[in-house]
Image (tube, rainbow, N blue to C red; front, side, top):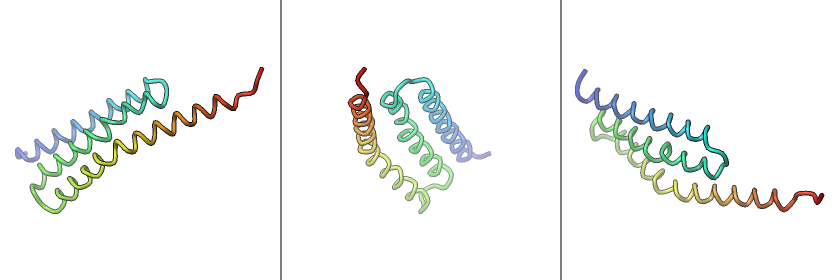
Amino acid sequence: MTVRDILTCVFLALAVMVVLASAAGLLIMPGAARKLHYVTPAAVVAPVLVAAAVLAAGGLDYATGMAWLTVAVMLFGGPFLSHATVRAIRSRERDQHSHREPR
């Protein structure tokens, strides 16, 4: 195994651990808004680690550029998606509370 192969494996293993930790947080936390906090590492850190693995495996080439472009789009769009998700959760919770039948 070369140093490049070892680095690739390390980056991919770290990405898998981040996703597993995020999944554990999703299972443990109550409420959709709280669970959203645990999606962030899987949506931000793991793709960066995978792109780093692609860089380590192939060096600077077309695939590496596309991987980092994908990460950039994810990093740019992630906060907007999280904000929209929280607004939808709060709107749905507000609607459910307002439509309860009187006792």
